Image 1 (cartoon, helix red, strand yellow):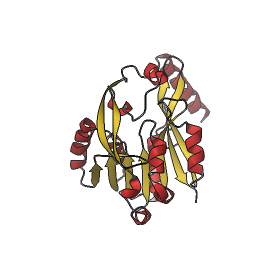
Image 2: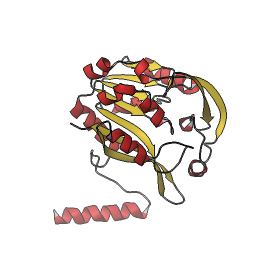
Image 3: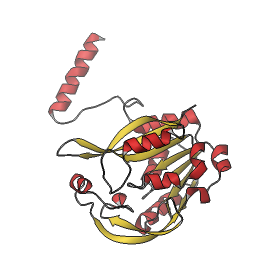
Length: 244
């Protein structure tokens, strides 16, 4: 065992010398595997995928073994067409061309050169520095709906559900628009900001406190946006599990 540890350490040193490293592919080291394990443990049957973009999140779920229903929400025309093609090949994937928020209606969303950075909110200078080329290039008028106008508590209770929200600073509005449904989810996954990445967007400590008040605790974090010049983590993906 001691000899194996020496060889392992030597291997790490060689890898790091050329700017790489390696980790054991396990749930302790990779958030995608933690998510898959949580879903198995909770017997998740349905995923509400808010801010689905081109379907990348859903494809990742399938890649790691999830075979339950997916309901994806995406308001942007270009992204939605890519999402449609992806979902059409699946058979258990429903898509809705709408954003979710606190109030139903229509709203103007800022479209980024990087579509995944599009937001109803203004983009901070911190974000622009960390992600060059993500500046807004136009505006699109999209529909917005409250989740509690599209789903019922029984739908979520009868099919243990996972609530994923990736909406670029609009998280609090989506959570508020869920109403009493929020308490019924088995788990909630959000992209949260350590600093103001979007103007007037909530910070991580505010969302953690808010979800704790609904009986959820954070159980997993993964860096999603890091400022390369300072190594400062700006955004993380966070999974919350409902307290049992």
